[in-house]
Amino acid sequence: MSRDMRRDFVNRSELIAYLRQEFPEAARNADAVPDARGGRKAAEDKLAEIDVQAYESSRNHLEGAVTHLSPHIRHGVLGMAEVRDNVRNKSSGPQPGKLLQELAWRDYFQRIYTRIGSAIWQDQEPYKTGFAAGDYADELPADISDGETGLACMDAFGKELIETGYLHNHARMWFAGYIVHFRRIKWQAGAHWFLQHLLDGDPASNNLSWQWVASTFSQKPYFFNRENVEKFTNGRYCRSCPLYGKCVFEGSYSDLEHRLFPNKPPAPKPKEKQPGSKKRKKWHQ
Image 1 (cartoon, rainbow, N blue to C red):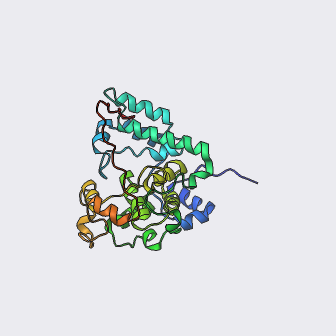
Image 2 (image 1 turned 120 degrees about the vertical axis):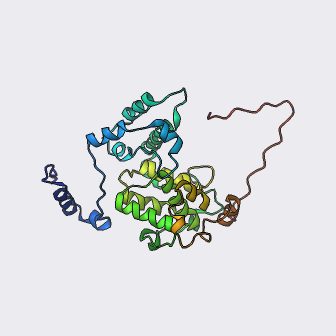
Image 3 (image 1 turned 30 degrees about the vertical axis):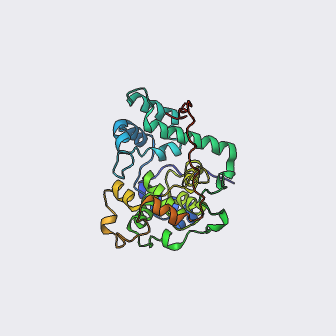
């Protein structure tokens, strides 16, 4: 017989103790309690603080002006239409802007999840890496989940994920790219680990983003090099990393592509332009 959960607590510590008691298995898997606050008031405050122009110019930097709205959207405290309208009111110019585009991607992922349900855990397409799904390991190694890879950036990202329930979107992409392509582990293992810890974790955005990185929901795999990490973190991790200059992320994108995907067939050469033909406009402008 189900029973209602308590709603009134003397303080936050009493609430945390109650949740640990009610959900002992979850507490064993992840006992850290993030400082992030929920509730409508906290969500409204973050919504009011959105700086659309600052987001546009700095969103890829770990210190950029991101919104931190995703947990509130994920748990229904804020509606997508409400956030969309707020962003529109703060936007200028005829183009929708990057923040509205990100909201559109989130809505798109949710619509796919509604259609395919539990198949969100299955490869939507084959890998475009030159490897088959069976070439990837099923389990996440302990050095990754325990933050003992020796790579300052990846170990810091893992610690932040577990302790705060948050990772910047760019850090999520790097981490996913590292797990899938540099360690050759199935995206499902990383996606499951993320969902154990992310405050905003939901199978739609989480899994389909992992599949985008893996190339099972995109035209090509996403990967990165050390210069990319150093640029968008302002060198925060590279400066202290004992592997600086000799880590697995070193090299140009061309070098890394050959190293990571030696079996990948070369991209087809573009067709020669026929005399008198017109270039077709891109679908997205």
